[in-house]
Image (cartoon, rainbow, N blue to C red; front, top):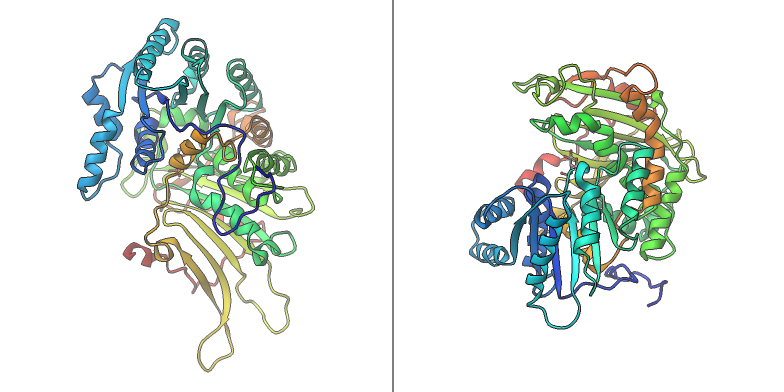
Length: 519
Ligand code: BG6
C-alpha cells in the first residue's frame, strides 16, 4: 500500500503493517469486576458488537479476583450500556452480547491461576475453524498488579497460533524514573508492536478531528502559528469531586490524573507539524504518536511560576476534598491545576499553552480555546479578538468568534460566531465513544492513536520537576489555594491567565451554548 496515500472525501483507515483481527479472536478483559471495565470497556465492546465491528464469532472473557456468578457478571458489565428508552432492538442485542461474554475468577500473581485461564480460553477457542487463534488482552487494572499480570499472560496465556495484543492504561508510573522502570518491565514480555498504550483522549472524535481541521483547511493552517495566535488554552472541567475515590486520587493528583496525559496529548496534536502520511509511525513521530514526540521535545520542564494549584473546599451543600474519608486529613494534593507550557520551535516560540484541569467545578466541559492576536490599531480600536473554540465534550462543536458589522444603520463591529455544533449539523450521525474507536484500532493493529514509549518518556520529563516539588521531594510542599465546590476554580485563575496576555471577550458576548439542551 502506498505510504503517500492522500485523504479524499472520506478518511482512509490508517495504514498499518499489522494484520486486522477479523475472526478466531478472544478478547480477555483483566480487571473485569472494576470500575473502568464496567463504565468504559464493556460499553465500548458492546458498541462495537452492536454495530458489527467485532471479529466474527468473537468471545469476551472477563477475568478478575472477585468471585461472582455469571448473572452478577452480566449485570455489572451491562449496567452502563445506554438504552434510555428501553428500545427492544437494543435489549435483544444486549442479551445476545451477554451470550458472547463469560467470566473466570482468579488470582493476579499466581501462575496456576493463569494456566487455568488459558485452559478456559482454549475451551472457548474449540469452536473456531482453521489454524489461527488470536487473543486481545485488555488490562483494566490497578497499577500494583499491572506487571505481574502482563508477565503471567505472556508466560501462561500467550497464543502460539496467532496474534497476541495487549492494551494497557495509565498510570504509566508517577515520574520519569518510575515510568522507565514500568516500561522496561513490560518490554521484557511484550514487544512494542504488540503493545497498545491507551490515552483515551486520543480516541475522542474532536481530538481526531484536529488533524483534519488543521491540515485539510488552508485558511486555518496558515494562521496556525505565533504570528497569528496569542495564546492557547486547553481546559478540563468536572462538576464532581473525588467522592469516595480519594484514596487513589490523592496518590496522583490533578496533574498526573489529567494534565500530564490527556491534555498534553491534545496539545501535541494541536501543535505538531504535518505528518508525512497518515501511517502510524509518521504520525507518532510528528506528535510522538498522533502526538508529536518532536513537538514535546521542544517543551522545557514547567516552571513553578507558571503553575497555579487549587484544592476544593466545602460549598453549595457539597463536601470539601478533605472531607472525603478516603483522603488524608492534611492532604495538600491539588484537585485543580493550571500550568503554562512553552514550545521552543520556530512555529510556537512565545505562545503560551495553558493547560487547566479541575474537579468539583461549576460544569462539565473539555475545550480548546485558541485566541488570536489583536487586529492592528487604526480603524478599529478595542474590538474583540478572534477565538477558535473546539469543544471536545459534551456536545461537540467548533466555533469561531469573529467580528461582524452590527446589522442595521450602524458601522460598528460586534463579536459573533460561526458555529458548527455537531448535534445540529450532524444530527443523525453516531459519534463513537473514545474507547470504541481505540479498541477497534487495536483489533486492526493500528497504533496511530496510541502512545509510544518515547513519547511517555518526554511527557514525564516536562512534568517531573514540578511533580517532585508538589510531592515535597525538593523542599517544602506547596499549598494549593482553596476554591469552593461548584465554582469556576480558584479566584486567582483570572489573573493567572491574564498574565499570559489572554483578553476576556466583551462582557456582552456569550456563545449561545444554553440552546444546546434543546437540541
Ligand atoms: C481519567 C481520569 O483518565 O479521565 C479521571 O483518571 C477523569 O479522573 C477521566 O474523570 C475523564 O475522562 P472523560 O472521558 O470522562 O473526559
